[in-house]
Length: 215
Image 1 (cartoon, rainbow, N blue to C red):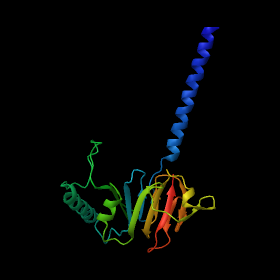
Image 2: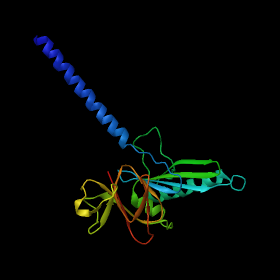
Image 3: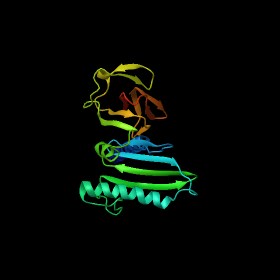
Image 4: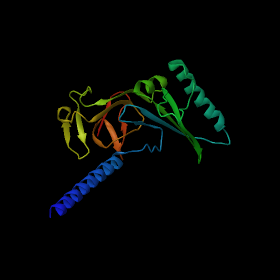
């Protein structure tokens, strides 16, 4: 009987471990969110880095895609050389520790559209690199705990209105002023002064700040 009891206990423990592993796996899969832009927009990662997508009409009979690629590469190369003395525009894929302030992550011309994706190490780098672009004039990222959102009322995804003091301090907050749609690595929870559609938020005003809170 003692051997059987030990066997049962062992099986129960194994089942519990497997269930826990499955729960973690499905939570990870559910939480993992990819950037799927259909227009020029930004993606904010929970580590504070930014991916920008530039999507524009491109007539290959009129324009040369190789020249466009060379132009993008040169701009990134020049910026990186000025900031860190490294004029590369791409990371070394074999070196997981490799890093650059700005990286050209993809370039594609297809079906009359050119799509350029650029990775920025953080928001300050994004704003600095795009200082002459007025599509986003202010961008901040933090947790609720560290955000300056005093007095802001938020709309929840469930339809209720809440004050900032009721928000979970560990939720993420994006503060934006501009006109670019923004996606984010998480699930939308609350928002203020932005339009929302399918977990993509677009500021309502180019002169007033919009707020996106996600988990």
